[in-house]
Amino acid sequence: MTTSSRATPATEARDPRDELPEHLGALRAFALSLTRNSAAADDLVQDTIVKAWSNIEKFERGTNLRAWLFTILRNTFYSDRRKRKREVADPEGIHAATLYEKPAHDGRLAMNDFVQAFDQLSPEHREVLTLVGASGFSYEEAAGMMGVAVGTVKSRANRARARLAEMLGLEEGEDILAGADRNSLAVMGKSGVAAA
Amino acid sequence: MYSDMPDEKSKASIREQINENLKRVYEEALQEEVPDRFKDLLAQLKAKEGGK
Image (tube, each protein chain N blue to C red):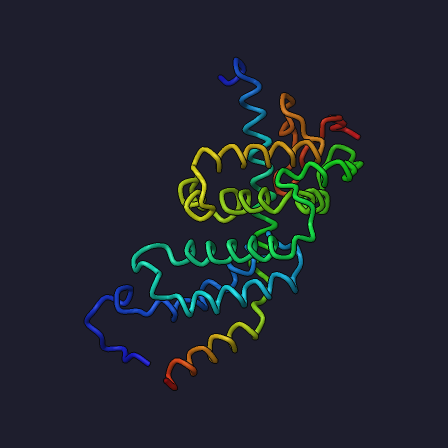
């Protein structure tokens, strides 16, 4: 244990391994977004922790530790998936989308419908949306984590959003925000039955 | 103001709605309690390191 009377700045002196507990919640949330299954997510976080711990010397001090951990997590996820080879290769979620039935909502988008549609996306689409849409990473950071070009992140995110919008019956070109109550997450559907 | 580009505007609206929902799903996951097994695992790793 370090004593409290240290002259060096805490951020420089601190062992990044001691910071791991601060990232567990985010790692788990990211793992859940990829696996959509809490047991699988926990296993993935466990593997990530062990890998991070034993490879900590590869972490560049002063860079974003969370991004580094997320990179390990997603690489582990995809390499496990390749090993299993159980799933049909479907990076764009085309197969999944054809099996999906649009929610029969009456102009209001319920959280459940959103979650169900999100579940139908491919992991690659869930990943990009979680990184740039939910957890606040920049396109550049996401590109670094995903090991692809920034342009790829952008186009993948756009395709993922378009697929979600399609599944949810939110079609571009209509003003879905008109009259929507943002607090209740109400979104007007394409049928536009505002006063139903 | 924006009426000359309605497509861009509604595209941005959909994007905003989707982002809001994404954040909510992520926040919900963040709020779940972190299982003890991870803290235990870190403690074990740390103990192993010290025992070398």
